[in-house]
Length: 342
Picture 1 (cartoon, rainbow, N blue to C red):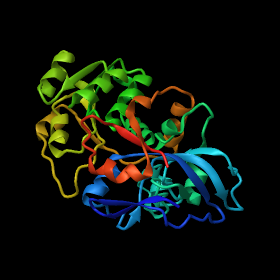
Picture 2 (picture 1 turned 45 degrees about the vertical axis):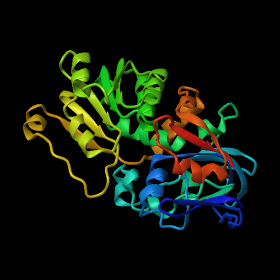
Picture 3 (picture 1 turned 90 degrees about the vertical axis):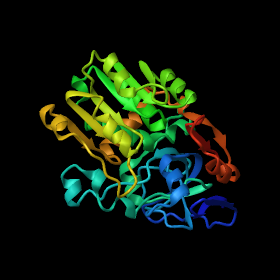
Picture 4 (picture 1 turned 180 degrees about the horizontal axis):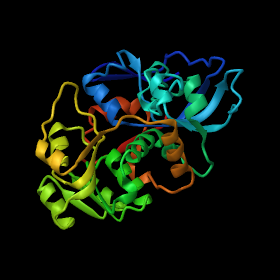
């Protein structure tokens, strides 16, 4: 089959002689109809990733049609359109028992990696817990958004959204704008986006942001304080993964508020906070990672029920042959995500 291989950081090859995946007794093989580019894949391309030692197939946001299944798979059938995430918890370890399935140490042992390809094997744990039938009226490109949306749904679920009338989202990339869409769907009246680049800020307005701050030309904290009567917002979602922005996020939150640290910083980096601000203003800093099956289910219904329109986050289509060039020139200023169509 044709598939993209990350040969080494900075080098992708599209090959036509990659072995077809084979379904085990509880697995399925999916013909990929759409795979979305992702920030994690971009990081792996640029500097490597410990879970993707090269040479490796990669890509993990996908949807498609089942073309083969194991003899013990009962929930799905050959020919069925599906949407899925790429990992699933074991359901038995200490973290799973504590409802922290996103921290299950077995998550990365059975991943479905290799979505930039014609076919992809989805392992049994994922099939059992986190694969869903794709509705006929949901485009494959939108269905492939299930994985990043699941991460966003989980992160937002860790914050006291029900009591908040405003929220700040720092970062106007695809993840930040998925936060905007979910927060508006949940009824948050004022969602403020702080970010850069005209294309991304204009898209933020399209998907529902009530106020957009160009942090390249404005002082973001001052703009947030002005928009919130000097108090700051009770919720701040950091979606850039930059240590300096992790620190800045605390300057935007109100007393008694919560800062959700969604963006992952490079390993080994540190941040510094004013202890008096955290203590006397009773600020909560909440790190979040990955998703749980409950979050995947909620994200699935947001997409399947047509409650979110994620099409503005898909900049355009690319073929497998165009993947190396797409990653080589992916600047982000005028793009969100590309749909890779094998």
